[in-house]
Length: 67
Image: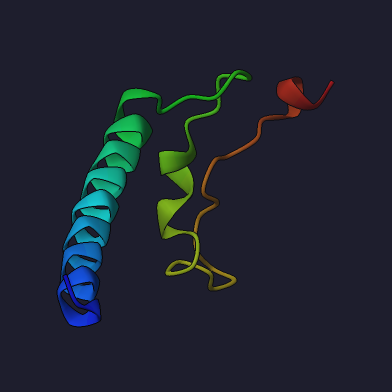
């Protein structure tokens, strides 16, 4: 086994590992949407797109929740 063959096998297994890791991370994100404090961070996905001063807040806060 020369170096080029070893590099080809290493590249293949690295790509397979990264694909499996990416899909498992995406699966983890969608199955565990809420963290321990009960916050669903999917509400914040459009925060970068809707950042004008006149846009509605991502998650409105009422006056009773502040106390």
